[in-house]
Structures are given as structure tokens and as C-alpha cells.
Length: 251
Picture 1 (cartoon, one colour):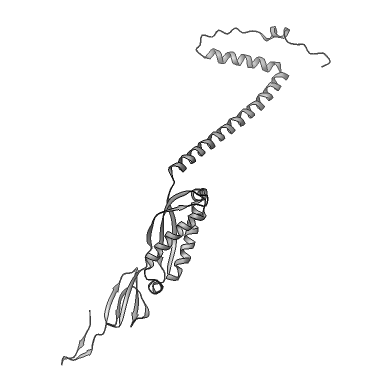
Picture 2: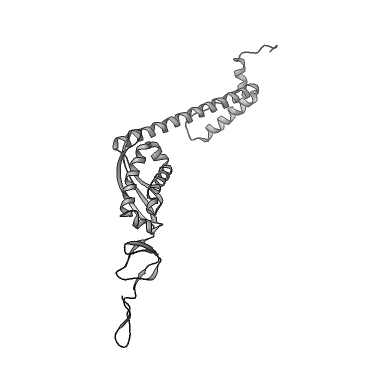
């Protein structure tokens, strides 16, 4: 839109005074005058000189970029496919226009190559168990590469790790063997603790004959409560003393 101020005689007082360009709150306008960088305009209505100025709008919001699945070989020679997502935004609009032809395409290519490079330097266990470390490494490398373009990479997240079917079966067998090993260790520890307690109980019963009789009566009570056809004949323990070896008086 051109604003012209005319006199009553029809002559133009200020020909082609200016052209207004409106920008939204999240947009920045980089103005070039005769091909040279003039300055960056903020949001709102701004006026530029026709035929001399040219303005390019840059979106300063955070952009979400999906990195497609990349096939790579880890350091321990495991072939897998990994995809990721990158969050970035333009911090310096002038650098995003002058220093690179297309900052989105450049960031996309850098993210792809960096993802394959980091995967080749990592092991499978680190990728599965310490994914946060891999994410931080990806974010740091990509951010260093895009910093001259005025782009700030804030977050890089590995989304999905696709393993070959043979590797999945091997990992399942390994996990099952690990669970069996832990179960056997727990069972052995339980047997050891039980044997210790039984030895202590036997020593106490050996020192106190009354304890053995009380245990005998408790067993009879437990059997009597069950609905079975078992017949129990109580036998006094005094009758068994004749068959037990007698200790020496000196002992």
C-alpha cells in the first residue's frame, strides 16, 4: 500500500512515501536495502521504502523436526534403526538469513548425520540403558554445528530403537537366564539361613528336654485340627529314654 500526499493542483508532495508490512508477535523481519543488510524489524506494522528495501520474515517459534529412522552399526557391531526428534528455534534472524541458504534443511541434514555418527560410537547397552546420555551428546553436537546460523537446538530425543529379530530373541534368552540365576541364588540363601536356624533350634532342644516334649504336643494339636483319617497314638517320651544312650556321670 502506497501513501501519496497531493496538493490541490494535483502535484505530488511526497511520492512513494513508504510501504507498510505487518508481522505477527512471533515473526522477525530482516530488511535489506539495495542488497545490503539494514536491520531486523520487530513485530507490528513497519514501513519500508519501495523498490529499495526488501524484507524477509523469520519464524522465531520453537520448531519440531522429526528425524526419520536411520540405520547404523553400533560400536559392538549391532545393526539397528533409530529415529529421533529435534526441537530448535531461531535466536538470531540475521544469521539465519545471511549465513545459510535454508536453515531448516541444514539443521535437518546435520541431525541425520550426527545421529548416525553418535550411534556408531555407542554400544547397544548404553543406548538402551543410558539414553539420556546419548540425547545430551546429540544435542550438544548439533547445537555446536548450528550456532553460526543463529539456530539454538534445545532438545534432542531418541524416540524408537528397532532391533533385529535375532537380537531380540538373544536378549530375551539372556534376560530369562538372568532371572533364573537370581532365583537360584535366593533359594540357596534361604536354605542356608534355614539350616542355621535349625541348628540353633536343635542345640536348644538338646539342652532342654522339656522343649522337645512341648514340640511333640504342639505337633499333635496341629494334626488333630486337620480332617484326615490318620490315627495318632500318643507315646510318652519316658518310654523312649530306655532306648537312648546314657551319658557318663562325669560328663
